[in-house]
Each structure stands twice: as C-alpha cells, then as structure tokens.
Image 1: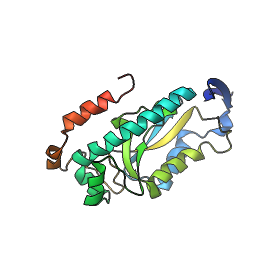
Image 2: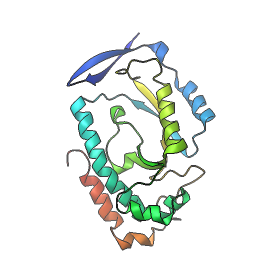
Image 3: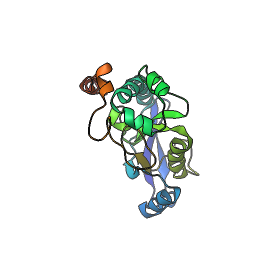
Image 4: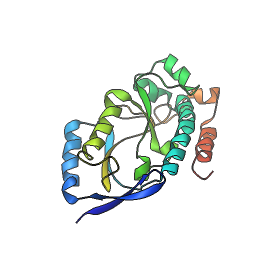
Amino acid sequence: MPTEVLFPAQHKKIVTQVTDDMLFDLTYWEAKFQKMNFPGMDLVEATAYPLTLLEKINRKKQYARVKRDFLRYVSYNYVNDLRNAGLDEDSIFYFKKGIIPENFNVHIKIPFDYTGEVDFSNMCLIQNIPYHEDIHRFMDMQMDGMAPNMRPRKLYIPVPTGKVYIPLTMYTGSGGKGKHDRSVFAGYSESAFKSLAQKSMPGR
C-alpha cells in the first residue's frame, strides 16, 4: 500500500508516492548503522514534516543567523570539547567572532523537513570529512531511486551527542568535568547565550 508524503514544488504542495518496497525496516538500518560505525551517535527515527518553499527559505535564513550565535556560544562554554575535537586556540578565537574553520560545519541534527527546528538543541559542530559526510551518505542511501521531490515517510538518522561532536568517546558538555570553563566570563555568560537561543527560536 503506497504511503503519501507531501513535499512542496514552487509555492504549492504536491503529493508523491513512497511504496513499501522502497523502504527497509529499522532492523536493517540499525545493522547498517553499526557497520558504518558512528561512534558517539544515536540512530533516531524521524517522521516527514513537509515544508512549503517559503517555510524552507525562512528556515535557511534563520539558520544562517543562528549559526553565528551558536559558534560564539560553544566557543565560550565548550572550550575543552572544542580542543578534544581537534581545534586549536586560533580556531577557537575565530569561533568567538562567528567564523567557522575549514573542514568543520554546524550540523542540523534533525532535518527541517523531518520536524527539526532552528535552535541550539538541534545543532552540533562537527568535522565535515568524514563524519558530516557520512551522516548525509547514510540518509541519502534511504532515498536511492526516489524522484527529487520524494522522501521516505520515516527516516533513520545518525544523530551526534552534544553540541560538539567528539568521535571517540565521551563529551564533557561544558568546560570539562562538571565545571564550566572560565572563559565564559571573558565575554558572554552561558545564561546570556541561552536567552539568545530562545530569542532566535521561530515565532520570537
């Protein structure tokens, strides 16, 4: 029985068909997830939430603005995590100006057309090669053979843990070992950035 999924084309929505034989079950993708090896990530099932073209444009504009705030936020509150992810002091300095270094990206954990929002909780700083590319390769495999406007109703997504992706083991979640980094007080406080994140959310 085909499953209808709505996705926009220009300013109007269209109906596309995703048949059962296009999709694999969770067991298959869990095995693929383990085989491809995504250390420090969880496999999350997300349901399609089609956006209009205007909604997509607005989300992308909002992302470009919030991304700069996110970089500054992690540069003051997650310094040890940045170092553990392989960033040097010069790169961290540029983060405080909202500039991202080469081979890093601010990743959207859950895509916008799968209920993802533009806020800090849905963002993660990650290396492009190989980790960011591998995430998108895993998602693209689930769309092989589909027309450009087609999406599976359910998508299995490797989701990094924390605000800064550290591929090997655990992340500290702040300045390190339960204590916030002293560099917080050199500029914006953590509470100020949390307030900034809330103001950046849709509808505010």
